[in-house]
Every structure is written in C-alpha cells, then in structure tokens.
Image 1 (cartoon, helix red, strand yellow):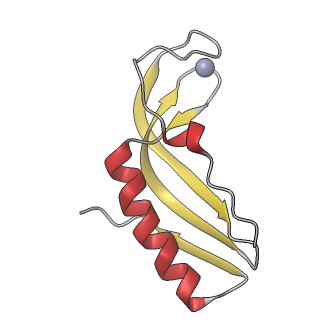
Image 2 (cartoon, rainbow, N blue to C red):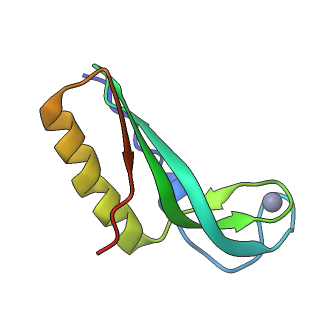
Length: 88
Ligand SMILES: [Zn+2]
C-alpha cells in the first residue's frame, strides 16, 4: 500500500514564493493524490498560488477538508475519481 500525500503542498507560510520570490495570490488549484489503487483528483481547491511560477500552497483547514473528500473517494474505490472541492 503506497500512499503519497505531499506535505509540502499543504504547508502555508508567508506570502512570498520561496522558490522564485514571486507573490502568492489567492486562487484555486487542482489537488491530485495517488492512493495506490487509484487516483483522486479534486478541482477548485482554494489555495495561494505563486503569480510567477504557479506553485500552490493549501491551507491546513483546506487540507483537512480535502482529506474528508479523499477518504470518501477511497471508500468508493474507483481507479479515477474526479471531484470538486466542497467548502465548509
Ligand atoms: Zn514562485
């Protein structure tokens, strides 16, 4: 059972991109997680996105809601699950 959940994408810090020095602006991103048996794609996830290199950061509370969505998809056990982020 291999499961990757990229911790770096969930960490949120100050509003300067540590990679290119660009500005992080509020936007949305597509979150993808590989559950081993399949892939879950969550669209329209609110995130801070670098206006220069496009790297995104997802807030902790958003990540927690994402986990609920991912767990739900895990139960359905589909090879590919594409869903939209559901705000609280
Ligand atoms: Zn950047």
